[in-house]
Image (cartoon, rainbow, N blue to C red):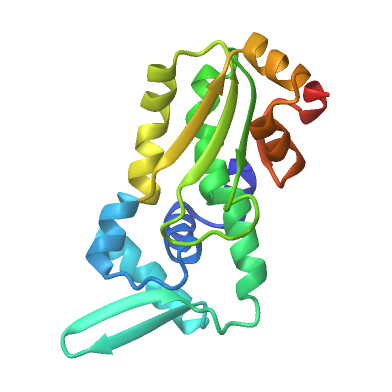
Length: 193
């Protein structure tokens, strides 16, 4: 997905769109966007001007305060947001963060409100991980993502053995998660049958 995003949008545009479109009701100041993206104010400002001219971003001036937010009135807002979510959104960030431990992780998926499409600004991210990774290592990998997206990630970690045992016992928690919406990041769900 990273290659797709890089082909469609340059680094700065991708970062700006991700911040604005993943939290479309929030207003951002220029310096705040620069800090969150790690990109210079000048480069961010250039992209914001171009995106505002295309009505993809809304610029608001109140006294001396200028803020920017996603152009939710744009006829292509929903489609662009879907592209941003798939290529630069939370899903992509978490998948990328888990990549260094990919050999130890058998299955990882997002469940809960975000998987249901109820991605509210303050929703925490529910993540289930099955594998031979230490909980402390998992937290260390996820911490930069938490800081970047500004929300808590709540991981549930199971060894393969524990996961299979609970599946066999028809554990209520796992059963409800497996029957609900999920965003698979690593592994395959058919392994859970």
